[in-house]
Image (cartoon, rainbow, N blue to C red):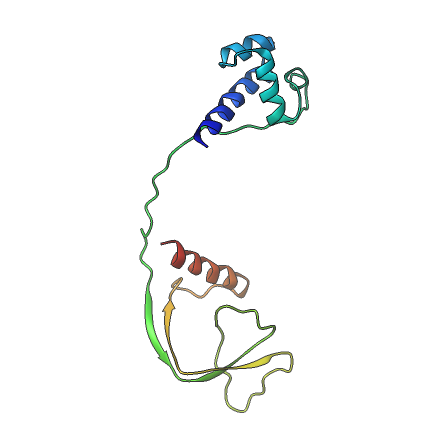
Length: 156
């Protein structure tokens, strides 16, 4: 795999020079280590779908393979606050049954559940509750905030 990445990168450099200069195909092929202009043309057409001569024309789509780089990433740099809570059984209601997490509010006694919702009975359970922010986000940001917490839980 590394060899193909190196070959693709070498072809990218040759392509940039070919498209951006008046150099001849044979000169570029030899400069970038191809045994012949034919070998270069074959590799070029396999990657780009056009011949090297066609690529010298304007407005031709070409592919570029970026330089390989290595990165070290430190995870867990910010603590995640959580607490373990035990909750008694309760009822929740939801619209379509696809939710993978619970959020909402307690419905005061005497208030009816809207007809478009389905009632869900939740037994006594122990939960890990993760805090995401100091301030509760606006409703349009809440789904994204829940997604961000899940990403942090699974990636760190």
